[in-house]
Amino acid sequence: MKHLIIILYLFISVQAFSQFDRFFENHTLRMDYYHSGNHNSQQYSFDELIDEPFWGGSKVNMVDTFDYGNYYVKVFDKSNDSLLYSRGYNTLFGEWQTTAESDSINRTFSESVVFPFPKIPVKVVLYARNRDGILETQMKYVVDPANYFIKKDRRLVYPSFDVYISGDPSEKVDIVILPDGYSTDELGLFVSDCKKFADGLFQFAPYNKNKDKFNIRGVWDPSVESGNDIPADGIWRSTALNTSFYTFDSERYCMTYDDKSVRDLAANAPYDQIYILVNNKKYGGGAIYNYYNVSVNSNEKSAKIFIHELGHGFAGLADEYFDSSTSYNDFYNLTIEPWEPNITTLIDFESKWQDMVKKRTPIPTPDEQEYFKKVGAFEGGGYVTKGMYRPMHDCLMNTFHGDEFCPVCERSIQKMIDFYSAPETK
Image 1: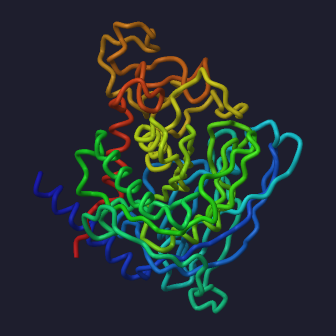
Image 2: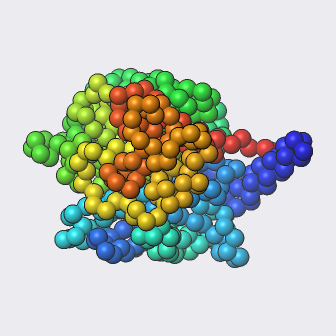
Image 3: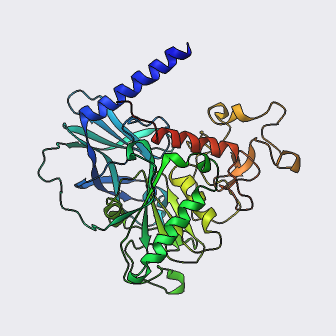
């Protein structure tokens, strides 16, 4: 039986690689679009197609199997509607829709999806989850790879450098690190910070056990000024990626609305994940699943900020804290199971980490010292005090008091690492 399973795995791997080689080129097609609306409505409109020189994703696991994300992109063979590629993701617009501001005004955000450059005409379909967690079609666009309006000229062409390389991008988790707020004479600082990022990443489980499954590269694009924007303090800096604290008027939330510059700069290297390092010692950062991650470079808690934000951006992990102020209203529908792997409403606990709970651990789990080191279901998580549950009393997705992810988060990260680093069988 064991030999049969191995043979089946090899067959699936060969088929997956053959599918990539048959339908795709080894570089990226990026589709930019505009996402507009308010708290109650949203609209999509096409912007442009851009040919980018690298493909950093898997050539084996082309179809998303996690069902994570509030949004989805699916790429179909136009001739027969067979699914060739898919990924779930989140957006800054989706977070903004849950803020008070979205009740009073409309806004427009530039967004992007990327997929391998197709050899044949394909249909790209974008989806968004409704309040009940069901994916609804928002936009369809047919891509003909022979279309001469696909842009070949690139913006923000800058040199990349290796920080840590372990192998072929298609068989590794590829992280590209982008600088914001590093001036021309601070290249040495950025290179040092990239090395510090890599060293910090591999200090934490499960990354420390998977060092051979990662590639990390940096791209050097100097900013006109050092630092970045802190609007409440009247500080405005001219920087490459336009990051700013006080995103959604939350002081420590440091993000950027400039999606085009982020994607243009990231295109200088193969990537699965984009990580923006901000040259600032002020505490802050942020991350969006399968979109981008941000953290400061020189705060005393920088290493844990790195690792926490990558938990969001790479593994789709939710924040497990619930007792601090955020800018969000009604972020989760408590009558359904959230898609994030580390929080639950107990609606469908079996689909989450019920298998990791010992028989004598009560569910819900009392937040008392005898259970602090046990996996259970502790009330409070995802910015919600009641009706949402987290796996353990504490975790790096909750506070920085400890140095570990809980077993549930660690397992989730490991699954994502395995998905992106699956080896090709040629």
